[in-house]
Image 1: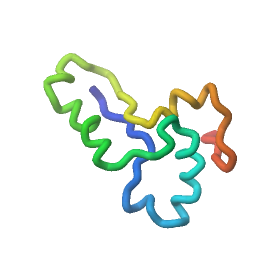
Image 2: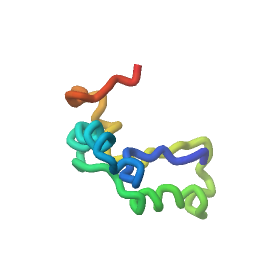
Image 3: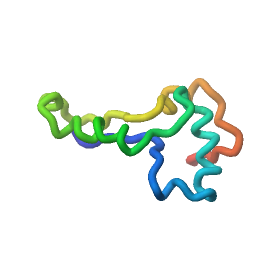
Length: 84
């Protein structure tokens, strides 16, 4: 396993108002309607270190809120910037 690809995660750096405003459109666009907590990322981050991942190679599992599965089928939220 090469690593874990975390979704949007609430951290102390993402709590100032100038950061939370731009994140709100992404929260609304996710199936869960929110971003992850740091504690919710501990399990996915721990998985590659355990025996359960002993036969997993060349993988980067997504640990997100379902945002990636909806990108192709749902229009981009208003205010969200393109990655181009």
